[in-house]
Length: 491
Image (cartoon, rainbow, N blue to C red):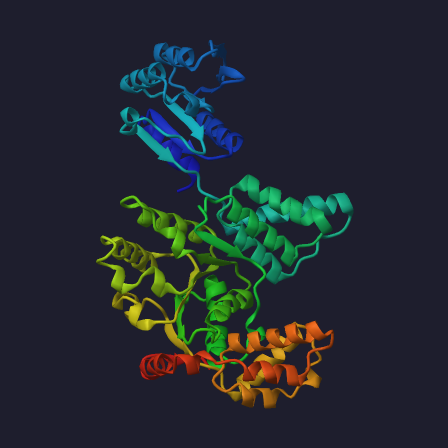
């Protein structure tokens, strides 16, 4: 049922008070004008600046609009079953006279309808029982594509040539515009095409940033756009293949109706082994926005505040879909040991998260990372919460050599001047993060001497480093033993 049909149903059942939640005043009023025309009704509009006028099919009748109370008194005494539209009613919801007059109009049980248009309207308790809240449907994919084509035609008419765009670019651009109002969609389409006559990756980034900034994230979520792809991470070949096989189904569900969209994965492993980088690389490879949930900011001091914060954050994540949600070091936010010590807050937060994970319909791929599996609640590890649990172990010799090459290239060093196989031998037991730090340490040492980084500098830095696998050997070995028969190796 479309918006017009839903409004007509409210009109037919004599719903006297309707709040339409929208920023698009003029578009909504145009829809109400059509509703009035189709149902042979007059329509009136009121605002604090322009006053009001009942615009009938055959007559026009003015009324005093200096104050909202005067307009409401006029409506209460009128026998015209018109649709009365108020643009600025939210400024008067603490006015007892206005509230009383609204109640009087509603109590008359007539066929007239009061419509308040506002993006955010706090209705007094006295009126809530009589109020229907109506949110216009946001444009679907077909409508977004239609708007994009309209703006492309306009650009072509002005410039005499077609706007450039690939099929994949149009598909990504269209899907990321979902969740925005029609006016925002049209504005972003126009800006993107007008800029250079083409739809590019930069235009998609603009859409995502606009979408993110228009939502109230309350600093609970961080949006990361420029993230690496899986090609920029050494090793993890089994994980890469697993993601490759699921990419098309997640990004194009319409052409894969027989397969459910992938839900997500849990990455368990040794600290510094590359779990966080892998989480970012999923978003980079799938060309999706990456949203990171900050558990530290989630917990509030008042009863119920933490759960409300989480629900708000998850609503934003759904509005940003398709996207990747990264839950970093999830055991610190949902540690099983904290369930009793915090008065049950962690337990309620976990219940909220689990319910959302099982019921969400939006395309949100979850990547959770954890260092300590024993600290996670069993409910989170139950089969079906995640599609797979991968174990990210310390890199093998071949992977370590690849990691050295990646970080040397990243710092514009001449890779051919280094024996990466020798460096791989010297770094046995090192994590990817520890290898990176060794190269950085070598870089600082070389810079202090005003010479390029050498093989000897890196070897010396490695010799001065005690990796976590040595410092915390018992804990690392215990984690490996636990994961041996319970998880899938990522490499």
